[in-house]
Amino acid sequence: MINKKTEQKFLLVGNWKANPETQKAAQKLFRAVVKPVSLLKRVETVICPPTIYLGLLENDVVNRNCVLGAQTVSSFGAGSHTGSTTVPMLFDSKVRYVLVGHSEERAAGVTIEDIQTRISHILQYPLSPIICVGEVVRDSKNVFLKKFREEVKKILSGIPVEHISRVIFAYEPIWAIGETAPRPATPEECAQMVGIIRQSIRDQFPELEELPRVIYGASVSLETVKGFVEEGQVDGLLPGRASLDAKQFVSIARTLEKLKK
Ligand code: PGA
Image (cartoon, rainbow, N blue to C red; front, side, top):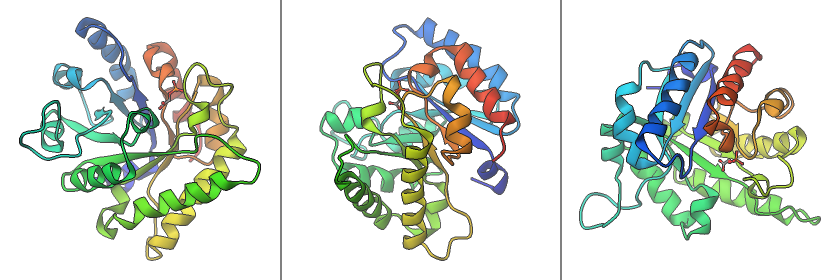
């Protein structure tokens, strides 16, 4: 599913979270984004709307350059699991990427074991998990670095080598997410954590010639795109709030299109 061409592209993932409030508004936002970003050659765009809008929007997916993603998936398979949406259901709704372990879900009780289970369910289908990892706070003794390494290692230990190229890691520093965050991470902070993720992948899979993609999310805006790509060393971005503003989101995509990878 993922060929060399896809890997060379930047990945831009819009996480709409619990927005907007009506089908009409969701369709309007999606349509305002999908056409302009589909024209880009070096950016693959993924829109993650609330699950309930996936079926509505699948008809507006015009080409493989802009596809649907899901914000979450159940840890269970089919059966007696009230309120759950499974991987085959997402796949059938044209979803191709699934966010796993976003911090807002972890705060609501999603565990590392849930995350591992979800990844293994996702990898049974031609889908890519976008695994969100990031520290809650930074401490002066660098305990957060040790914890971060351990978590990435634990997640990687459950991924078979034949699936690793499909996996995407999103470095999402929790302290930098949302409108109450004091600031985004700096490109240097981003490069350090992205470096740890890439090194952990190399340690786990020394035979890999090409590493899977690593992206950044947390208070991404048009102003920060260049810094995260050039100094932050990322393969793409995962904006939340900025994905709800079609104009800004399309500008972010166009800025990525012009940057070197
Ligand atoms: P934000 O959200 O861009 O609104 O900070 C990012 C995220 O939570 O993925």
